[in-house]
Amino acid sequence: MNKSMRQLYIDELRDLYNAETQLVKALPKMAKASSNSELRQGFEEHLRQTSEHVSRLEQIFEMLDEKPTGKKCLGVDGLVKEAAETMKEGYEDAVMDAAVIGAAQRIEHYEIAGYGMVRTLAQLLGEAEQVSLLDQTLEEEKQTDEKLTQLAEGINRKAAGSSDVGVEESTSNSGKARRVA
Image (cartoon, rainbow, N blue to C red; front, top):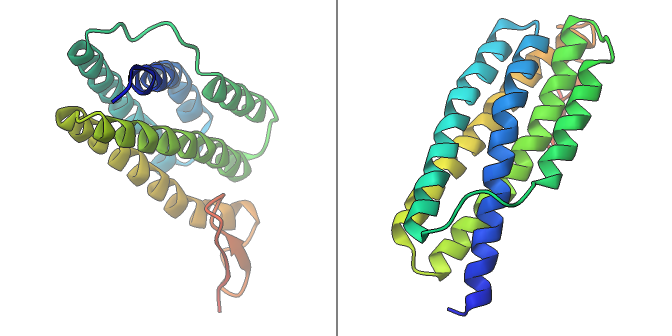
């Protein structure tokens, strides 16, 4: 595999490393902004996972004999700033929870795309042990996104002021809308 592919892999890993370290700071704020206890616990759990993601990335950098620093993740930086703006809006409890879920899912989708890419690059570079570590993280990011979608179903209904069946609901940024009969 050529040198530039390896450099792309390292650059993308640095981007994710910076993203994860930004999230270690942002997730407690998202938890604090959440009025729903299950959502708050979900953010606290994801904070623990995010610390593990940072450790896994550090392991990979060690295997590559590279430093994890040196690249700012502008994508997550923007998404975190957007989330902070949303949390300043002063929405009521369930509406704030719905807004925070939306912000969190945008971040999760960014991470899912990033981890999918680096896992593929690791496969192409023949880094089987690194593929395994990246797969673990990718799976956890997907599970977090799914949990957020499940929480959004109830929270969005509450935010809309109705828990009655027969209302149209959106499952928070998952791209699916359905009418409940």
